[in-house]
Amino acid sequence: MARRGGLLVGYGASSSATAWRAGRVLRVAVVAFFDGYHCFSPVAALLALPFSAAVLASQAMAPSSPALRGASSRLREMFHAAGFPPSSFFALLNGKLSQTVFTFAATLPFALTFLLLAKACVAAVLAPAPDAPGTRRQRRMSLPRAAAVARAYPALLATHLFNSFVMLSANAAVFSLLFLAFGAADLLGFTSTASTLALSAAGAIAYSVAVGVATVVCNLALVVAAMERGVAGHGALLRACVLIRGSVPTALALALPTNLGMAAAEALFQLRVVSQRRKAGRLAPGLAGEAFSVAYIHALCVVLEIIVSCMFYRSCCKRTEADELRELEPEEKGDLKA
Image (cartoon, rainbow, N blue to C red; front, top):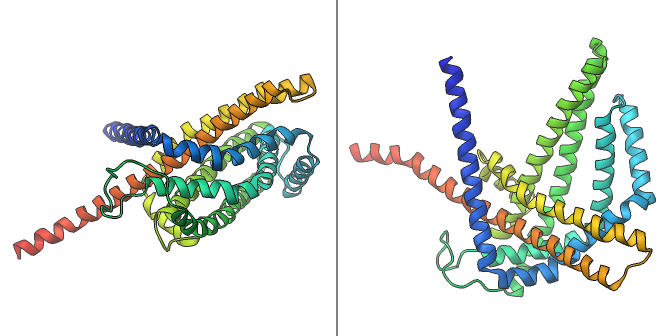
């Protein structure tokens, strides 16, 4: 009982520490957002807005797109050829994956240009002052120079392309494990509805965790490529893996609010713009203005997500430096005694 109690106490303390750290990083990010709103609002209007408009437009066009239906049918055939049983989990996974592939392909030109430039601008605004590395910037925030953004863009582009292959590999790895799990269950005779439902639930959890961890690591790798010179591609990803060690729950907790904000903006666009346009049969001027407002809200959420990632990067750097100092303390004390 004592061990169980200790485990429960340790889990509660770890959960509370994760929540406290995530809340602290999020609070600092929101303060920085409002403190530098004069810098971040132009970034949202000029750079993040085209990407947000492309995301919202692609989701509006997805239901009637033959490319989406083709991707969905191919994924269905792939699941059937792999031996996955027909279930609601794989039907939902098929729909979400096909929509994700369609949105990724439709917004890729905007992501490689406008989104990466927005990330470079926000990272340059939040970068520490050259005369005081590792400390908080004391002077007023200002828009970065074009040379600083242009210098960071190639590293961001290489890292973004490498992250795409990492996400593809993560999805392929999870599907391979699911194939092995369902194949083993079929060989052992666990083909009942309850067994299929249990395996589907476990597969949903494994897929969500794997894709979530890969997403937060890739986002941190982009911040590393923007903040640190000479680090790009696989180097930025390895650096992100080192920084995020022990902070994966915090990163997942930080990704939740901004992703919920973007999901709310996308749902609002479907409710207020797409449905009204289908009823009216045309895009009225008032409806176009409402679409622009929702797209701008989505762009602000995108910028806020970049700020949260930058603040999380700072927190990870400070924690890594503190851990190194604690590791050096016993050696220094031993040298003094000698």
